[in-house]
Length: 212
Image (cartoon, rainbow, N blue to C red; front, side, top):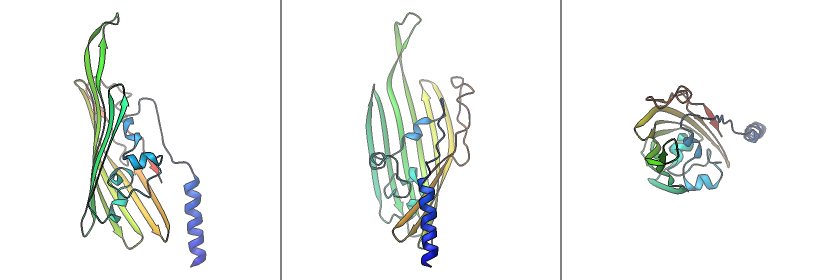
């Protein structure tokens, strides 16, 4: 048993030494979702997939919802400058058979000046990106849990809009003092679709990413 445990921990350690797989691209749909959620998680550089023991777990790893036994609320506000802001609010609702999480993430800019051909200001527009998360986590035995979250993504620039719906899948494994988590984001490769403002390069499928 000790030998099996040693090899298991060794395998998990080897996997964790690999870099997280992120695919970034210019003009990636809803790139604001890459910024993360929650002041504590961001303060840890996003190394939160296995920890995620607060109301931001619906974003970082929905499987972690299953281990939360108390009602929790979290909120974050960041002033990005240039009239831009970044916000997150979330709650965890534990029930006897499972736990649910809800979250709202927003990045917005209040004023963007528009100009004519000679540079004269002609008006202002607003830009806003947001996502609503609903997550579910369920334990299987004493050391394993799975979770799934659905998210509705909205992007808006003045009168132009685009929307998409995506799913994230998470798992978490507890063993003594070792905790290992995986979160697969954009499991269904959602497609951001909008009106005439968004050209074909912005109406592509989201990239899948893997965090652990």
